[in-house]
Length: 454
Ligand code: ADP
Ligand code: MG
Image (cartoon, rainbow, N blue to C red; front, top):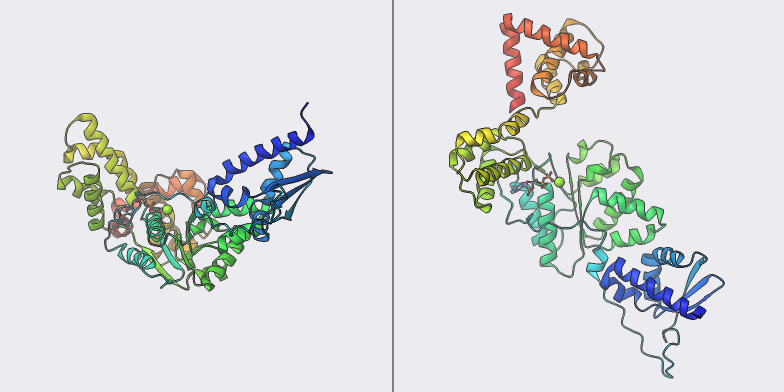
């Protein structure tokens, strides 16, 4: 028969195995291996720890998980107590107490596991093509790596989708880690921060959560706009942020808009985020797109006719991600057909992408441009007012929304103050009818179109 003690020891061994698997070898060796099982009595587990230091750390960072795991072994267990025992719970019946072990080294790999987002090695500074629209952001990131003490804190990068924010964040994190191996560099998306925070709240581990985030040397948080409307998480981020900046630790964040333009973000956080250096990644221009295509084509071993590069750089004018998509398409085409890409074959291979790229104008932009052009208030685009002076521009905007976006009529109607799709249809017909006979109106439309397409 298995004795109670043997059973306990087997449970403890299993549990240690799971802790090692969950937290990784590094953490396990530093913090969890030194624990010994002293007793399990009256549903109370007593563990021995070598030092107070180890105990505090274990309680803070792994305590609740330890308890959870133990309950899975034995759901009667209610409490885990730690006793400090330099003899390691008397298992070594030596007369002379062994010397206190040195405090374990902080294990970075184990520490960052599960909290950080993985870094993609391809997103390096070397692979980043610098041009007018992004050179300032690039320089600021390089500077953050060069200077040991932060020159700009926080560094705030913002710009539209696919313009290289994440790329620069990864490059910066990797370069910092390579240059200062002893520093704790933590890169994560705001989404992950939110997730970690909620998890910590649920597990009642906010203390270790705070401790962890406040112990980093460099914190990089990508896509901070993700925290909009998440009040508690914003609050937590705000405090983490303040604590780090006050201690002179570098904080780098990215967002899709400048601090003052992020909606749903607390004012004090917005203002705090703007205290350091705020740099924009501007929309790409032709030269940058050409250079990126050239470099990426070369990387893929694809010799492209400059006229093809020119064509793609001109026509896919949105962002770098779409540029890459187009290039991948061309690579696949040339591999499948076994022929090199000509201007014609590029045109046909990319037809749908080109169409999508051209239509990537938003209804909001249309409304804004039209309101500006006719000198009316933007709010009148969705107001119920029917005076000709506002109704006509509104109809023009609906007409353009139909032609320049892929939105359905009901969707367009909703964006214009919840109008019915028949109203939208009527507006489109009206403008078509009028503009064929009215030179002024058709010139208006041409001008607005042109400013939208730039
Ligand atoms: P964002 O985070 O701003 O949405 P990403 O950093 O994810 O954009 O960039 C989208 C894609 O374009 C990535 O594959 C990235 O490597 C690439 N990219 C963006 N800007 C550049 C650049 N200047 N040079 C090379 N690649 C770039
Ligand atoms: Mg990104």
